[in-house]
Amino acid sequence: MIDRKKKLRIIQSSLLVVGVLVIFFTYYDKEKTSKNLIIPAETQEKIKRQLADQSQDQDVFYNIEYSGLDLAGNRYILKSKEAFSTKTNQEIVNMKLVEAMFYFKDGTVLSVFSDNGIYNSKNLDMIFKGNVKANYGESELYAQKAEYSNSKSYLIISEKVKVKDAKGIINADKLLFDIKKQTLNIASFENSKINANVNIK
Image (cartoon, rainbow, N blue to C red; front, side, top):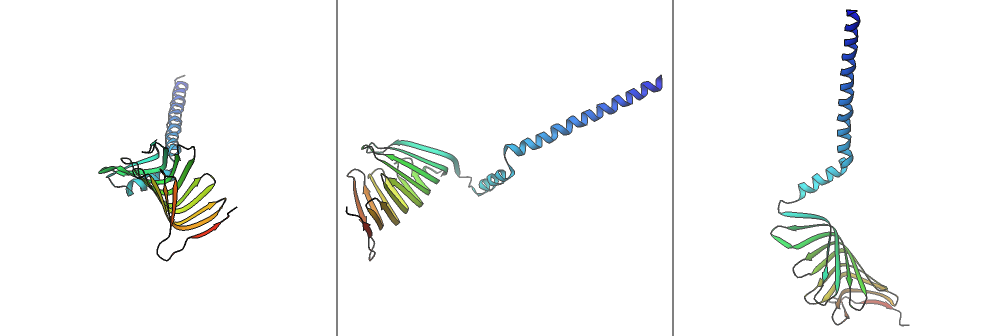
C-alpha cells in the first residue's frame, strides 16, 4: 500500500513538472514569436539604420500633411511620406516623396509630385526637386525643379522642362507662371533654343 502511494506521488510529481515545463516553453516561444510578428526583423534593421544616420539635432516625421491658404486666397495641401527639420531651424521642413495640390479660385487644380522637397512653414514657400511632375487641366509638365513663392505669387519651373499639352509639346530651360496675373513666360539660357511642337488648330 505504501509502495503504491509512493508510485502515485512520483507519477503526480512527474506530471506536474512536465506540465510546468510545457506551459513555460509554450509561453516563452509565443513571447519571442509575437515580438517578431509585431515588427519584422527587416523593418527593425531599417529603423536602426535610420536612427544611426540621423543627427541628434533632427526631428523626423512620417506621412505628414500641411494645408492652408496662400496670400492670394488659393487653398493648398502638401503631403510627404517622410520629413525632417532641425531643432535650430524648425520652420524649414525637408521632405521625401512629395505631393502637393493647389486649388485655385477659378476652380482649376494644379497637382505637383517630386522625389524631394523643402517647405518653409513660416512664409509657405515650397521647393520641389527631382523627377518633378505636374498636372494642370489637360497639360502635363516634367522637370527637375519647381519653386513656389507664396509672397511673390509665382511658380518657377526649371531644369529639363517639358510640357505636354493637347496643343503640342514644349521643351524649355525655364517656365515662370505668375499666379496673380495667370500668365506664363518661357525662357531659355544663353544660346539654348526653345523647342516647341504646337498644333495651331
